[in-house]
Length: 569
View 1: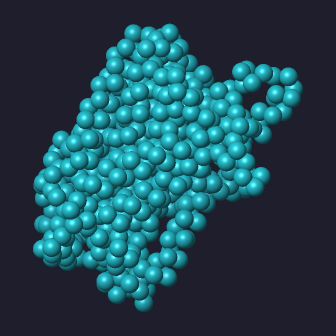
View 2: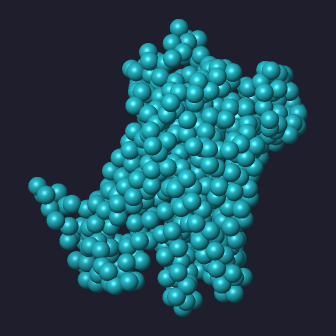
View 3: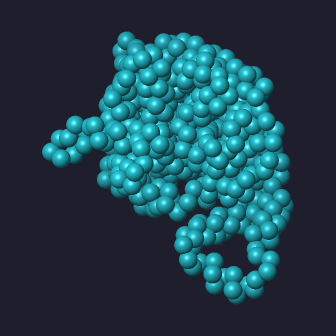
């Protein structure tokens, strides 16, 4: 019985099933995507809410040193991209990491991964829709069109702002003297109509853009591709303007100190920085719509990561060079704020308008990815058959696309941006960890290596992983206190949960060192696994707790429905 939970689909079986599906009338999707289109999709997904919103708070936490965190995270994604490319060249199917886990780690792991991809794509799209709404409302204000505050934010933010601002106003402060976020939240809650005593505060623009994008994704991949390519070109032009114009106003002294809040301040921004990169794997979800997925997907992933990391580092340095990092706390539109700071309101207006374009393209790519993963899971019997339905005219997963729109649009009305970013980031890193682990297991079979058209450069990890573990453990030990005192305090106090998480990381690292030595594993997948797992340890115990509940809910659904309905059963 236990072995049935980890049953696997062979690579030959997955490909033969796909060929049979494509032979059926209405089963094949249109193949329209090349390297350029895929690269633009990756850029659209990566250059989104983070560069126009989350980068502000991340820079406030870590200062200019956050640029190095972008590089570190991109390095983790680069290792992971090698693993994605390895799978994509072997299994050119739309299921992305879910399909890869099914071939290497087994069904229950694949299900949990697919369940977390729902978290990644749906919750990420909620965050992007919320950011889009903020910039869209600002753009409308600039054009003289006022959208009521209670229709532009979530209920929780408005209620918190009202509770915080009320005593300040009673103490004699004026409304205009409050922070802009407090002021807008207070006004939204106070002016909102009440229904049975409940203040109706909802983010209506976020819902409307989700509906519009869902319709575009529904009617075809060609239309989505063309729209995305235009939006990405406009986005890259505007970011080039931001960097080019902003560079003339940089004051180098603002980069000192480089990490004003130390390494802890930099690591505090891990969730926001990881959120920037969550979309690069969306490229692999379109494998069945690529002209040559085994060749084009690996290339597109690498190009997208290189382009986007360069832009993130440059924008971070320009932002923190113009605005001292401590002034960016709570700023939701940091790039527009940066140009207002140097009296360039015209450029600030262009940035606000371009943010609407940029976030639209990110929303588009995320809405493309999720239905295709559901479609693949449905084909395997783990979801109802309706999720695999292909529209006879548009050749898109019709029911899955509609359900994605519902699961993004409704939460976007009421969700809080910071909460959804944190939850989405940990789910994404979990997917990256399992993809790297899957490559290690897949490559233990020499036959699987012969079936791939993409090879990860092999570096023998047998000694290096264990040596790095010893060095890392030594550096993490205390200098000035005794072992007994340190051990006694390590698992006590407020930080004990975080310490348990870090201890688990070192145990997993030690196990990997053992298998690296005994099986001569490849170093790149090992590095991808360890770096992504380390980033997960920095998410905090609260996010781990929520993540655990989410996974538990997925396990319940698996045993209640998917295990019995699986085609491998």
